[in-house]
Image (cartoon, rainbow, N blue to C red; front, side, top):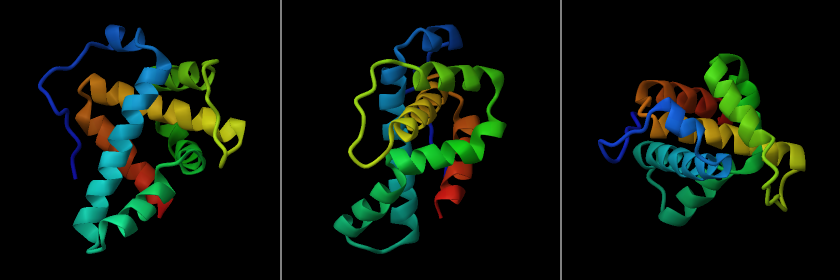
Amino acid sequence: MLITALTTDKIDEVTASQINSIILAYIGDSVQSTFIRTKLILQTHKKAKAMHDLSSQVVNAASQAKAYEHIAKELTEKEDAVFKRARNCKNHQGSKSSSVNEYRKATGFEAVLGYLYLTGQSERLNYILELSARKAR
C-alpha cells in the first residue's frame, strides 16, 4: 500500500525544517492513522468500531515509541535531526496512558512521518510506515 500526498503540492526540505515540530507531528500522526486504517480495511472485514479499536492499539504514544526504537537505525541524518528536534520540543502535552519518555519519542516519530509526507518522499515514507507496522504486529 502506498501513501502519497493528497495534493500535488510539496514543500522543500528547508521549508519543512522550519515548520514547528509539533505541527510536523500533528500531520505525521494523521498520516500513520490513515496508513493503519487503510491496512485494516484491506485486511479485515470488521465493523468500524472494531477497526477503530485495532488502529488505536497502533496509533498511540507507547506503540509509536516502540516503532521508533524499531526503525531508529534506519533513519537518515536529516530524519534523525527532525526526530531529535521534535523529541526535545518543550511543547509536550503529555499523555495519560504513556510515560513522558514514550510521549517524546512518539512525537519525534510522528514528526519524521510528517516531514516525509510534506516533502513528498512517498517511497521513503512508505518504507518507514511498513517497517513500523511490522513491529506493531
